[in-house]
Length: 259
Ligand code: MLT
Image (cartoon, rainbow, N blue to C red; front, side, top):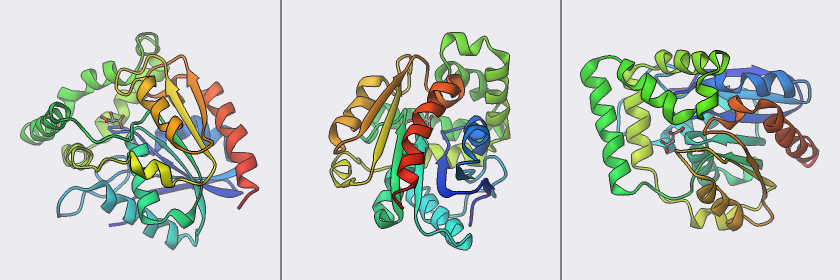
């Protein structure tokens, strides 16, 4: 089941992978800033944004990554850069497992390489069961806003309201799929040793979902990775779009010339 794919701009292709409970519109600031320099491709995970519901079968990020590769194939795209934030970072690792020769650069933001500990896994499975039982995602909207955004960003309606809107555009099936898929993802720590393309790692100093030390551990392990820390919460690209875009443009545009 090919995901909804949004395609804006011209230049070397860059695939943007959004966070849990978000959709492709998480990347609107980056599209506005970068689409004259690079071709910005964004997918919505199944059950969120404009994507179809999740397919039958065991929920897996690898399955979604494979279907994202199909979407790129159908657009005739062979090599591309990847920008993944949080769940998007987990997906970036799956893409690297599946098709490393197709990836020319990797930007990994607000994410971790380790698998879940048992407590987090159980929390995810409980949320999946809850939204399915409710037939609604409403119970997770405010708790997710608190986790995703730093205190000041929560007070900014132009940041927080679109975040609420994206969560509400996810179906219970989409949330349940993503949580169960994230819960079963493999540990990617050793995979980091195999990454041999230009890499940028971005953390948020106030990120309560993936703290900067976990993000820094990724940069420590990938050979020659660049590391940037922004003074914000988990959704760094939404809270601090300008410094985020500066870091990304400085990375992607020279990397784009490499392909
Ligand atoms: C995300 O923002 O993608 C998720 O919160 C990541 C996670 O829960 O591990």
